[in-house]
Amino acid sequence: MSALGRRPGVLVLVDPGRATPPAAVATAQAARAAGAAGVLIGSSFDGTRETHVVARAIREAVPGFPVVLFPGSAMQLTEHADLILFLSLVSGRNPQYLIEEHVRAVPFLDQHPVPTLSTAYILIDGGRVTSVEAVSQTRPLPADKPELAAAHVKAARLIGMQAVYLEAGSGAPRPVAPEIIRACRAAAPPADIALFVGGGIRTPAQARAARAAGADFVVIGTAVEDGGVAGSELAAFVRAVTE
Image 1 (cartoon, rainbow, N blue to C red):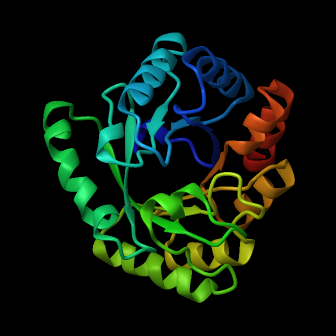
Image 2: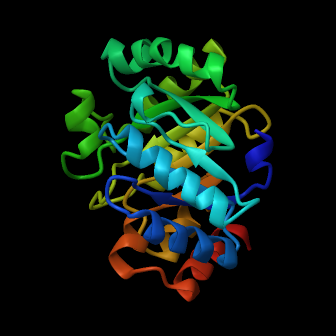
């Protein structure tokens, strides 16, 4: 995971289906200036051309700044990334997102050997039905059952996965609770598993709470989209996680 060797850190999420290439570049530039660890590109909806164009624009305009792909399907893969989170939706039981999209990704990865990080993707109830839930046709884990989330994390670790992504969903009314993060962190020591936490994190205080509970990388997206690209705001998130 050399592309994201610096921990802890903030990753700024860019949705290629909602951001034009110039807007995505502006977000990436602001994120780098604020000290973020990188930019995360992904969407629940398929959109191969948008992902490719946005990722290429960021890499060309912000050279050296890590671009991490957060694909919703094999159709969203692009060679213009430094790392692909190879997501398996282990909180659901839909085979398409457990293994099928991974098989479909093989021809692309054979041709474009972009580094991958085997990642257990775990949806946590964030207070409403999110795009991920609707598209994947899976239910999130309950927000008040940390032991259940931790069991999924431990199972993923035993299978051999290298990272865990706890997701409340884009724009969720509430982020993943610190109790869930702490339980998952206990099930996956930092030396073995990188822990990403995202969804519904709108304030530096919420980012700080996620980090204090054990997150290695805190992902923000809605806060940036809702408030515009404000360098001071991004810097506040970065300080909350890294200091």
